[in-house]
Amino acid sequence: EPIFFCMEAALALAERQLAGGGALVASKSSVVVTQAEAPYVLLETSMGKIVIELYWKHAPRTCQNFASLAARGYYDEVKFHRIIPGFMVQGGDPTGTGKGGESIYGSKFEDECHRDLKHTGAGILSMANAGDNSNGSQFFITLAPTPWLDGRHTIFGRIASGMAVVKRLGQVVTDSNDRPVDDVRIMRGSVCLTPSVSAG
Image (tube, rainbow, N blue to C red):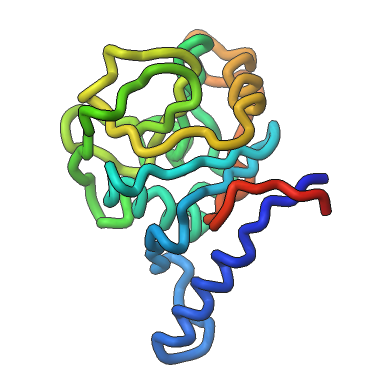
């Protein structure tokens, strides 16, 4: 089975914690990663692996939030709670209701919409929100162009590998509230230095 090499990023985090003065007993919930440590995020889902390239240049706070939450294990075992075929796959809420989730900043944080980034097709990673400047932990991945979301939701990455998995997620059976009938979830999230895949 292909293995995504995220060990270098984990080691970098460990080294930084040790350099900070002590053993690796620092709470995982306090990890904050940088662009150098997390240009990519790996989401191991119940339907396969997805590698995301983060747009740190355009949305630094949003990328830091998402990558840090992944490194902390915040997204582990979290459901994709809303899926609309031909539109998007939404997740990132530990409550599974679509009403929960917190950012690493302790509250909601501001949008980082950039005029150069648009929802032009499938595979765009964007923040779910409840209006202006209400970002937390929830995100969505587009399944098609969604231009009406431009300027309203922060785009902060794209699918670098695993688009076939995203397409399969977008085809699951859902109920009248767009919730998957059978749970599909993120089994584990982690940060990566490279999107490369190697046999192992």
